[in-house]
Amino acid sequence: MSLFGSLRMPRNLIFGAGQRRSLAGYASALGCRALIVTDERLGADRELAGLVDMLRQAGVDVHIFDGVIAELPTSCIARAVEMGRAANADLVIGIGGGSCLDAAKVTALLLTHGGKASDYYGEFKVPGPVLPLISIPTTSGTGSEVTPVAVVTDPDRELKVGIASPHLISHTAICDPELTYSCPPGLTAVSGADALTHAIEAFTTARREATATIAHEHVFLGKNALTDHYALMAISHIASGLKRAYDDGSDIEARGRLMLGATAAGLAFGTAGTAAAHAVQYPVGAMTHTPHGAGVAVMMPYVMEFNRNWCEPELAEIGGAMGLGISERPVAEQAGATIDAVARLFASIGIPRTIADLGVSGAQLPRVAEQAMGITRLIKNNPRPIDHGSMTRLVDAAFSGDRAGLRGDHIEPKAS
Image (cartoon, rainbow, N blue to C red; front, top):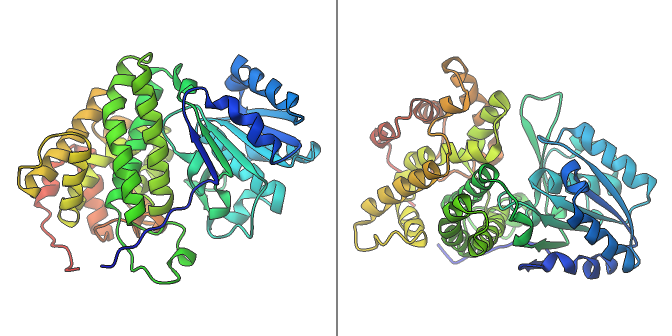
């Protein structure tokens, strides 16, 4: 296969301790009336007050919507849009975790093009550029500051719904690890596990034929040379920093590595996409109301085992990026050692072992499998083709904890 690479990313991406203070310079070049989208806790934070003062000193009128809540219901976004319209906002700034950044994306979309969030569900439904958007993450996890997707909760649907378009990518992303120093261990764990899952799935996702129209037909283009670079970079930094940041939140180097890894993972999956672990989490998360990062992390070792025959060389490379020191072993052994290492890392930071531990019941398994199969934008990215029968086996294994049982699933990959 010929070499192919693609990246979709912000115009400006700046990373480093203290870089939040660069906000006013970027914002004043983009607009005069900014709507900040954040949550109640951050809205009352002294750090945000300092940033607002800098914006105002730079001549930017600031309005703050601090009503973002977990799971991001569409009603919450509607209130942000109402405030933005009243302020005649010409710039949106998202500050916070993934929900805050996603809320900012959809708010910028609706302030520009009108309508409701549901008008844009799916891929390529956004008709054109949105208001200039600056994203400042305060957790090391979703990578939303650099990705083309926002996920919301629609009260008329059982599952979260995605809006995916290159027009949703932030104009500027400012990633300051100092903003994560106060993250408690539990949030550090689920956010970091989410980021590692993003990187692993991006690196092992299916390749597509690199046609001249691929970038216009798919928001998520599949595995390619450029996303591979960022995926391995992410894996290296997260593997080094996650457990250390979980154990000691004051470990500045670990916090920096973890945030850099999360952003690199966003660059990887924001173009390549994610796959089966994320597909299963959507129904599991809706049923159990557990954090997204916990759900995808529970699934990841099972999905890696399920996909193993289709991506053993990639799994071996992941082990190398994690620093496992296993390169002299046969590739099959390296792949197995990598899966074991990911499972151990997640266990060491308190990630549950099975979806049963998340609260899924045996009676719910058929619905989990059925709904996961319905998320085609993720299923089509999986390196191993999935049908309903194989999805059922995957979900059953993740429920019972029988990862070893998936090794007996001897369907051979198609020849490339």
